[in-house]
Length: 141
Image (cartoon, rainbow, N blue to C red; front, top):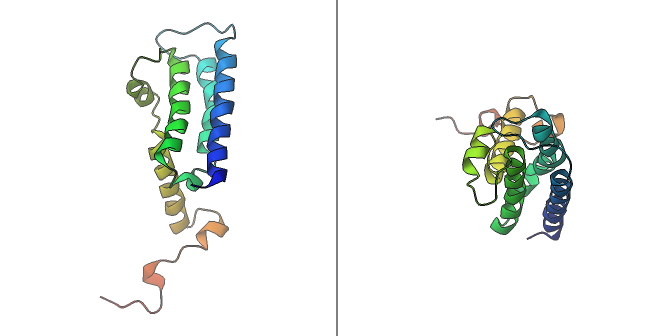
């Protein structure tokens, strides 16, 4: 395990929960039923952007570090819906259309690969891929 990855996960975890604790102690009233813009915007802007930043570097993280990142995402969903920790989080993540952290990482890598192969990614990524059909010494079937 890379020490830098562990430090990054610890930093994201600490920053996220400090933002959450600030938000829980603020005077914004809880919303029952549907979410308000403020209840959605704060976790999204402050925390989820940090979860998605450089996802492609997190592809082979150990399960213990992935679980720490997942706890951040779960806390954001609980904050949005004002849920207790004892309630299941799956329905909240589903209603927000959020993938779990391991699925987010794989999705981001798949999107970068797709965009690179189809020429819509930045040139520094596109130049790293070579189509098998374009290789000169490829045997024809």
